[in-house]
Structures are given as structure tokens and as C-alpha cells.
Length: 113
Image (tube, rainbow, N blue to C red; front, side, top):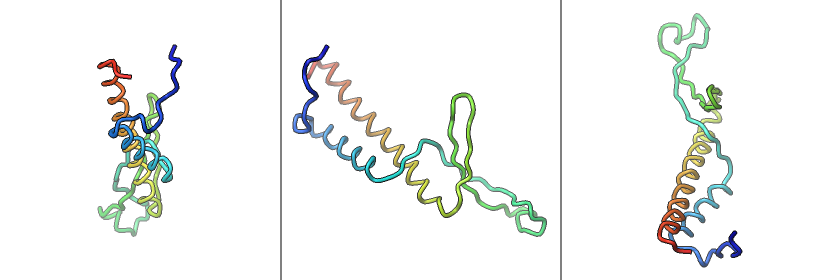
């Protein structure tokens, strides 16, 4: 069992400090959501609409894998930019956590504290 406290931020490498700083900024900035965005073309059902003649309406969906099944959620146009940013935040956070993990992997491999 480790009896040492975690290192302070000043004891971290510059690379890890930069990753953790960016991670903190992203988490504090607002929303994040796991999922994939999918642009689709859809028909509204109105027989006199242009989509009935082949010019379908653009629609954005958020796809989330939940075990063996997938969930889909229609995103209203007013929410497009916000949801795109949340999905991008989640992707960036995953990449930053992966970067921190790689630093710790190298430390363990090289037997550095």
C-alpha cells in the first residue's frame, strides 16, 4: 500500500500539468455528452412539402451505444451548436485522460515516482 500523498501540482511534469490544466478548463466550461452525431435527411410527412418530391429536410441525431442497443435522440436546430460542442468536449476530455494515462504508464515502466 502506498503511504505517500499524491504529488502537488508543482511536482508534476510540465506535460502532465498542461494536460490537467486543459482537462480542468474543459470540465468547468459547461456541458459534455458521450455520443456520436449523425446528420440525416428526413421526410416530414406533409404531402405538399418539398420533401415529398425528394428534397428531404436535414436533421441531426445524437447516437449513444447503451450495451447491445443504440439510442437515438433528435436534436432540434436551436440546439445543434450546443450539442456539437458538448460532444466535442467529451472527445477532448477522453483524449486528455488518455494522455495523462500514458505519462503515468511511462513513469511506472521506467520506475519513476
